[in-house]
Image (tube, rainbow, N blue to C red):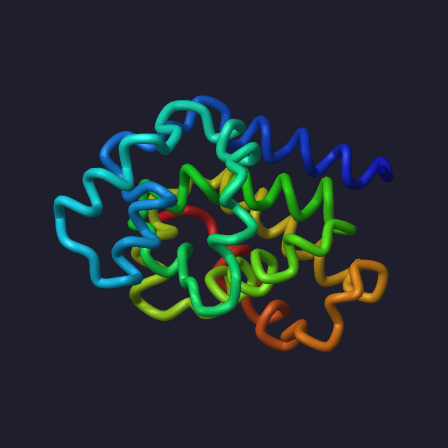
Length: 173
């Protein structure tokens, strides 16, 4: 692990310390929403999900499966859910980017962080200035490391540059 990776992991840790899910959409609940599940199915799916410590989300054995192509887990998280799971995803990508299991997670997260229409902007408005700066730093790291990370064929450099220079560089309103 490089010094830059350690620095980013600490930045993520500091920026998202104490963040809890609250009443936000949970990981398994978002998969049920993606499958047009009922409110009861959502409630049942939510029960086993971690709600207090986002670090435990990184240990979720279903995490890689939930990011398989065709499962838009991040797309169905609300603002609270996104804020809760975002640091776990960022930590996994920065700290364990050699793991092939996280390729789909990277694509999904990269899409959410760079396709900044009204829906995603509303979900990211919950982030404070320090959290937004953290996301900007991680995006910059991933962009600058893309050849080493072997994500180049799928990497949308122009969109990432636009997001870094635009939305993620703006102070929180």
